[in-house]
Image (cartoon, rainbow over all chains, first blue to last red):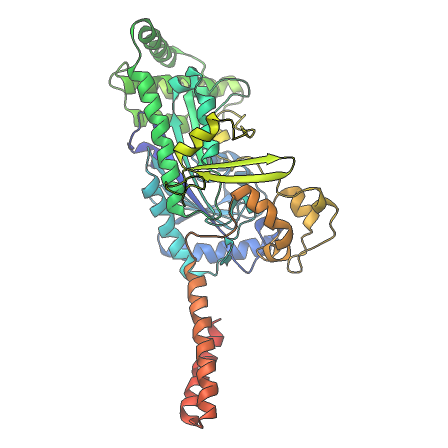
Length: 338
Length: 173
């Protein structure tokens, strides 16, 4: 069981929420300047506190590269961290919604990831873990600059809140660019998941806060919450405003997506994200019946390259083998077909 | 934070502009932002759009690194006395070497931090450990003051107790 198996609030438009708190130990250089011995010391100190509270450690030297990348796909660590050579570790709680990455870009990165829209809960979750560590270790904190981080772009609260949104109609409406600018003006950043060119794959967007200094955690969350409301209200307005031919065209696209997901023999990761996005829209609009949205959320992770193939023996040799596996997984999970 | 234009409503829009290196930052309420935007008083800044990868990895990173220092940093020979990181290298990587670099490079960091964050002073959560250290320091200076007074008044028994308490506190810091 992981965070992405649990139904979330407003999941018609919101995929998940993550709050990340970055912390560093006052007595050590930031990870980029650490040697292996010091990195292991930090892992030991942080681990001792977390393991007492029931967190389970993952030693990156003992798992495959694919296993590490899968943890990045589940959003527990950054991809760069998963591929890092310096000793580093990850601690996870049992329901797998709290993670602590040690010796990532900062010494400690606490993440709380929850399904759907849950900014306040995600912050509370991350803050509780922070309180455990703050009592036991001396954190790098300055009265004027707040929590000190390796990148000056994160000092102050050292908090990054992010919400992944599913806004397929907004992406196509031509209004996305204006909303991206609006987010920028309110100190937030809205990025579309793009395939390198134009367009937004699967209608997915990521909203994060940019500024961290001189603004309280609660203010960041408030700004995020209002931006999410603006985006989701706009998307819902576009959905409920569909009439006649427009509605038929969307219905057709959703049904075609279902058809491909049910019958395809090969399915690339990008195509899966695109079609799952359309099915999510179909489920929210009542076009696709009997589909649980949380299943579509889970597949956004489970059908990604590393998570899909980790632990599979023998591992797929080619991209085609991987695409066959993905098509099969999606077919089984959504339609129960074998 | 109130709107800097009408000084009445809560500021919800943060605006930054950089014209030939002159940076202007404004915090406005929604209404004032709209009025100024329509009047063309707000020059739009270029937006940074990243996320060019597929599949979902584009969302797992921390976004684009921010170039925080100007050309002056590149030619600087300054280094952090604690970790040895040079200002030039830190500027190039967009990352500092250790927590003490913030003090070592404070004069070079002040302007870019203000430009990026719009503010210069932390207002959020305070580390519990830091609060405890501050409290111990405050208590220490109070005790030292009282110790001086006790010695002056020849209250040696009290002074001895205070000295023990001071030693105990000093050991915790």
